[in-house]
Length: 82
Image (cartoon, rainbow, N blue to C red; front, side, top):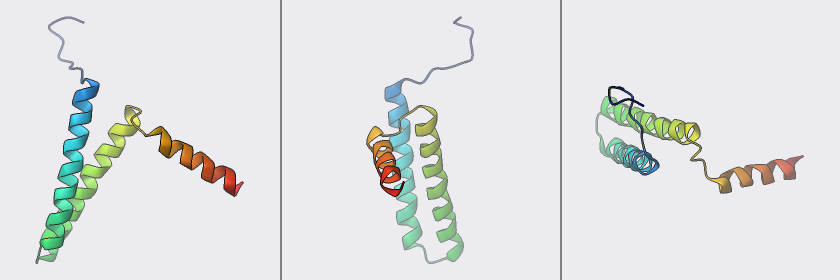
């Protein structure tokens, strides 16, 4: 790839750091929503927590960061119900 390319690559470590930060932001928004006295503010923080969580889930699925233990548990549950 040339030096003039506008495309940037995210390393696995950097991606982990981004996901951790998004998870922390989600937790912070959840805490803030519980302490709000105005319903509008509470809904705002709840929405932001959902948005951050959604981005983390999307990143994990796009970059195959889904824990294999979770997948195995899903398969076990399917086998039991079949």
